[in-house]
Length: 183
Ligand code: 5GP
Ligand code: MG
Ligand code: MG
Image 1: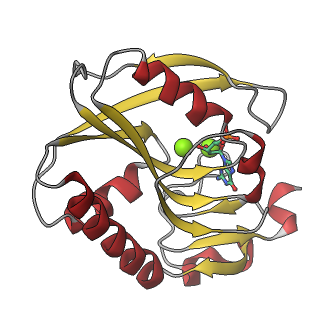
Image 2 (image 1 turned 180 degrees about the vertical axis):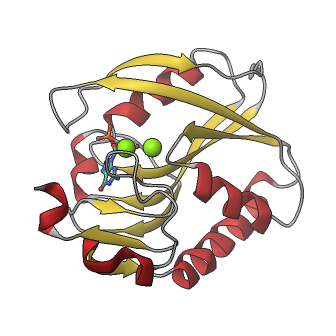
Image 3 (image 1 turned 90 degrees about the vertical axis):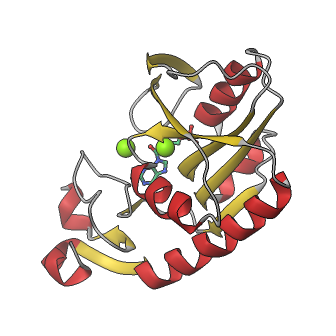
């Protein structure tokens, strides 16, 4: 869906589809150069990273395999606690392989920090992170993120894979919701 289909629900467009695709194309080139011909496995975190993954992988100037994980993080209300349970594990053995985690957004970074440690315990050759969006709170945990699409303000955003109560994932842009949606 486009922002015109959002009616009164969208407060503002933060990033257009064109801006996002252009940035992902830049990141894809950078990633490809950095791995210098070595194979790397793209690991997406369901479900938010679905759209980022689709665009990022197609922007790569060569082929790369892909796998998925699904996790649930236990927390009080809307904030994640860092206590994570694996709902769907990788299909692939990653020992000795280069892994690139693909994420939609990093807020506190607690979930991703847990995922990264979990993957690192499986003896991969390396684990790096690529996220489309990063919020300012992430400075609270020491998690090195090699590839960042955009640093955004501390606002709740939807679209481009990101949901509010499972809605708006299919919105082409990234935007904020009008207050009445939460009411
Ligand atoms: P963290 O552990 O980094 O605090 O939580 C990251 C997860 O929280 C993301 O993968 C995403 O599911 C959710 N999240 C954090 N900020 C936002 C946001 O602004 N919008 C949406 N839709 N989800 C968010
Ligand atoms: Mg996510
Ligand atoms: Mg969500």
